[in-house]
Amino acid sequence: MCGLAGELRFDGAAADVGVVATMTGCMVHRGPDGDGLWARGPVALGHRRLAIIDLTTAGAQPMVDAALGLTIAFNGMVYNYEALRDELHGLGHTFQSTSDTEVVLKAYAEWGRGFVDKFLGMFAIAIWEHRTGRLVLARDRLGIKPLYVSPVPGGVRFASTLPALLDGSRAAGNDVDTSIDRTALASYMTFHSIVPAPRTILSGVEKLPPATVRVYEPTGDLVDTTYWAPSFTRDPAKADWTSTDWERAFIDSLRTAVERRMVSDVPVGVLLSGGIDSSLVVALLAELGQRDLATFSIGFESHGGESGDEFEYSSIVAKEFGTDHHRIPIPTDRLLAGLDGAVRAMSEPMVSHDCIAFYLLAEEVSQSIKVVQSGQGADEVLGGYDWYPPLAGVPRDEAAEAYAGVFMDRRWSAMSGLLSAEWLGDTDTPMEFVRQRFAVPGADTSVDAALRLDTTVMLVDDPVKRVDNMTMAWGLEARVPFLDHEFVELAGQIPPSLKLADGGKGVMKRAARGIVPDAVIDRTKGYFPVPAIRQMEGPVLDRVRAALTDPAARSRGLFDSRTVSRMLDAPNETRTQLGSNALWQLGLIEMWLQAQGVR
View (tube, rainbow, N blue to C red):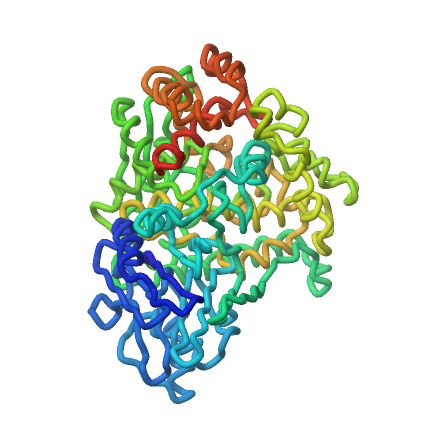
């Protein structure tokens, strides 16, 4: 797990090593264990290392294989690297390290662009071919590892974080377009603050979509190939399966996913929220023989009558499985620093207050451990959110409209009183996007179509990105077994009725009986609460007010000034369709733009 950066020139000039060094230096938090820089003619690659596999210098990057004529910068973890190394060794390849990076490099040499099909894991990859001058970028199937790309005059730059590209741009004389993308802004304001790939909120920066291999020719021509997509359809071979069959298959597949993520040359802990997702991960690790497992939970002070912790449930699980449990209470006076740090760590504006919780949790966890497993992703894959049940029984051709009616923060008609007239577009582009995604073949029912969209878009650009950004801000690697692609494929085949049963994630709750304490299974669904943001007051409200009234915000003029004033006067009154604080959504984007120096 690391950070990578690079530049490729198409105009005959040499890559700017100083700019790549600046971008790489911006990501020291992602890789505090070492750094590297490599350049040849039109290309330069940079890397920050978080040493998890092969802790020696043999695993350092960028990694060069002169005999194969390849150089790689790699971020992530390929869990089946040992089996692949044995396979490649049998095909005549030799190895100088025990790292998964070298396996990825040899895999490309052996299988070309199809090498990604061999990988079980999370990854963002940049490989340069010495002989052809071709650059290959790749991202894992579920987009767990980020990769941002920015076209610049005469070339292209790429990095694991968007702020690294902005730092590189400043070092190069501000050659990246940092204007606000109106289509992305519309999506942010309606589609649950999500900006689907390849767009970002900035016009001059895009993100490589998940499950994509991109090839740049030396001329600048590029080709994208999508190599994986879950179908969320029924498998005829499983037509006679009972609910018990599905429960057994579910737990077997998840057990495999959890076991894969035990691979490490350093200890692996768990972020234990107290919900069923992370509790089941702990239970399966114990079942697999994990001893002295470190688990970590975070809690906040209550506000507005809303509890800020779930220590009761995480402690039940810790006691049941004998973990080395750490309860981390966060006083309100520490929240503001966490808020500012989380905003700076965001590669894109992310409104979920979970970001602050993950940021502060990762700060504490990283003091004693470098790798954790997390329960992220289960709700999107297994139907755990409350917007899925209303879609059951909705005709498939009406699914897109029904989904928008229960999920989107607000409909297009409500935008005119919120965005300034100059920022309000003429077309409901977010709804066009939803309709296009729901029209893709596959996904047998309306619930299947919603789960497919959320798994491949919302999950990638909200929860997954949130976990990566906040944990890597402290050099902590987070592994997500619920996003093992083979597990996701199986989950997509499970009939929606089994997912929606028992108040959501029914197949999981039933499979977990006898493995996880009943008190955790039967509890009301919880979240990662930060009450001081949901019920905004005091220093948090002051920070939001300062951002929205800052001269930069007034100059930018994204929002109707009268609406902003009314919302600031009643900060907890206006809610999105899903009940989030609408003022926080406005304040967050301005806090992020100002933190990144975007004017």
